[in-house]
Amino acid sequence: MSPQMENKVKEEVAALNLGNKIRNLRKHRAFTLQEVSDLTGLSKPLLSQIENNIAAPPIATLIKISTALGVKISHFFRDHEMGDKIVVVKKHERYGVKKLFHHKNESKVGYRWESLAYPMVGKHMEPFMVEIEPRKDEELLYNDHKGEEFHFVLEGIVEFKSAEQTHMLEKGDSIYFDSSIPHALRGIDGVAKSLIIIYAPR
Image 1 (spheres, rainbow, N blue to C red):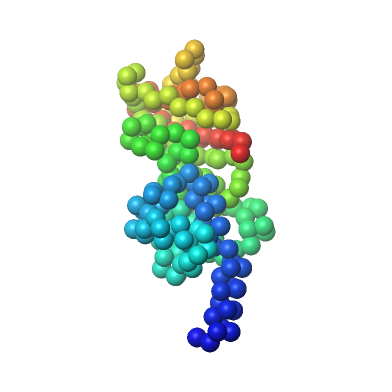
Image 2 (tube, rainbow, N blue to C red):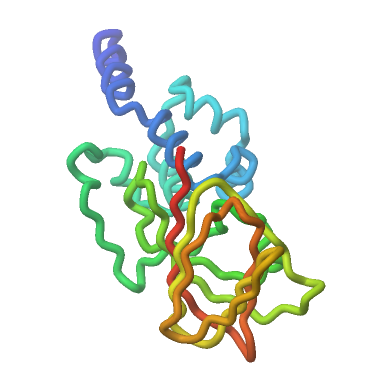
């Protein structure tokens, strides 16, 4: 490759700003570099170099990263100022994720989360479809984070607990609360399903 061509390629790579896009999406997903490394098989030093635009990822590497972060590779080549103001997520395209503000080990928490708006980056709300398993009192894990939450029960019965209140929510019931209050959820008489919308100020 001639020096002129090499410089042109470097300029095009810099213009794409892939590293910054990858870092922003990773942080938005609440993944650490180590977690992305575990998911992709790529080393942390390499991922760090990519995020800092020191190394340009080949297509195969970028596919691994995009898959781990739950987007298509085209996500990194779009004009996000225009392309992501409206996003549609079909039922079969839902992205199973760890809860951004709860424990990383879903099996301990007893929830299964599916993101309903993952292509929208920089949003202020996070909508999820959540399956909530039954739990014993001693197995409940209380969580808290800055912001607010809205829950709408779609199936089954959900018990919402805080230090001072307990609410039994049936199909069609909803609850809106300050999520800085430590809270826990569990299904009653089987797995329940809820639509949960989280607002977390930046």
